[in-house]
Length: 458
Image 1: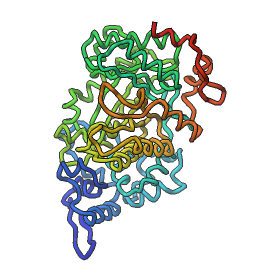
Image 2: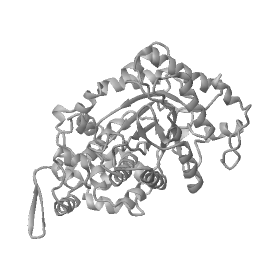
Image 3: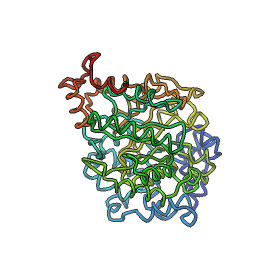
Image 4: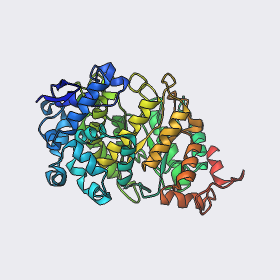
């Protein structure tokens, strides 16, 4: 179906829904690279006005990627709940934006609406929003998950402790773990990106992280971010796997490029669930996404990168993950050129994830060849904290020496907690207090040279 809008005495034509969505998207380098971006601000405005007049129900009639050739599309349509959709079924995309910003869209109504929203609907409405709109709506959404602690409660911010090492050296990894714990980080997950995906390395890292968690009775979870097939093998071998990780995309072809399918993710989910390692809940999956992944795999089908990203959230929510995050600036400036684009994308991703019911977090990050710097990350993490982000990622000194990119530091979490009055997951914070690392107000305490955590290095 074709779409059109008259602007500046000119009729602007958009041949199909995916073209309309792409042309309405805020400018970013990835869409220009893909050849789907608006050619001018005027065309972008015309597309947004046409999109604002589009009935939400249209997204149930015209898939942006054909269902016959894409299992992600089939998942989106098969899991859609028309009863949940009915309260907003009569709205246009523009009306939906207005409703989301109204008092009628409270936490309860947004929670009830989730099964009725498709990723494309959510992506579409985000394209009509200012950044303050994205923040305002996302802040009203609440998603709570549990494994060994409770993540996403009001007034909390969790942190992934990312102790990567360029040689998978166990002492180097443990040094990063110790650093993060001393700064009160690690309640979302202690998650290591391994250099090697071989089973020997995977087993060593899993056992070391589990030994630390069990030895000090830390109410958190570990994850070694190897390929999901390796993690299934590790579970079958009896290794201590808490969360199963996988990078995912918004099309079947993107996921195929990662060497995965929905069936493989279901197998991993069921295997992890069967281990029964959670103590307060059973959310066992950890997903990562990023705008540009479909384009980098030449698997975007002419769909803009932000809509592809939202479709990845449609995959993630089917598996009830403990956490899911966008590595927003990691893929590079070919997709998000500068700090302005990275900040906008981070807020879009957080908004779309929350509206779809994901425990969404963000790796506020950039690569060294992007036109971005630490000031941009300060802005992004502050805006995300305002929006009620579930968790962020911290690495020692904000510089990941293994992956070669810039993220946030453990110190950044202290800033956010102090400014916004944010606490950690309650079980984790209680443990920190028991270990004399926090006072009753959640502030760090000085650590003696005889603190028991220091023994992990021996």
